[in-house]
Length: 236
Ligand SMILES: [Zn+2]
Image (cartoon, rainbow, N blue to C red; front, side, top):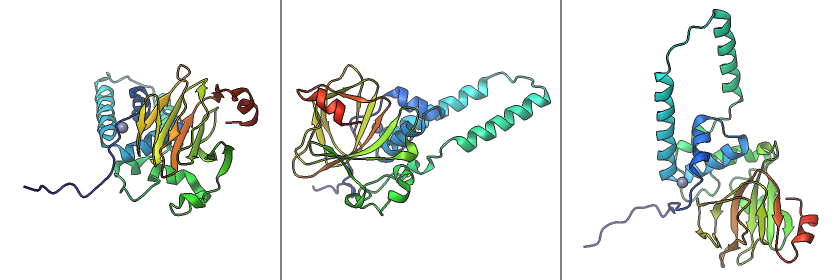
């Protein structure tokens, strides 16, 4: 008997952000850059959408169990004003609740941040800047700050990103194509998480360029044979 397979060919991610990053997101304490990264992953990952939903429900239940604290009315006004301000400042990532069709390369939460660069999903028309070694980048200035950077990376098919480590944390999510490093094979929606202990050389799959969304909270340090030179030339 032939069973009908699902209409969608969307890849279900098998590499996810760390739980701590999902908790920060659910609690509303993620930075702008990390928030865009997580929201974009949620748009592509049913498992993490479920997890964040559970975390939010848990947070709500904990708030309800807190004993009511009597506040002087001046205190209440100040508190409400502060909450209003927080609400206004907090980026809204509501659209991630809608799973995206496999044909849409850039998930909505990220698209909202591309601003003038958004060219209707045509990634080749974006203002790519050469980093060298078959790697191009685009900084997303709207989401960058406090030492954090959000970038699109394009790794030419079959090329390697020079071996590097990180002073801080890195999350890299595949949008198109795929790459492999010592920790595994990454396809659309998969998030590679690295920190200072990981020294890696991601290699893009042959056949198609790999475009990724990259979040870093500190500069990369290149460690390969020409690392000293790259560290001078490439301000990543
Ligand atoms: Zn996930």
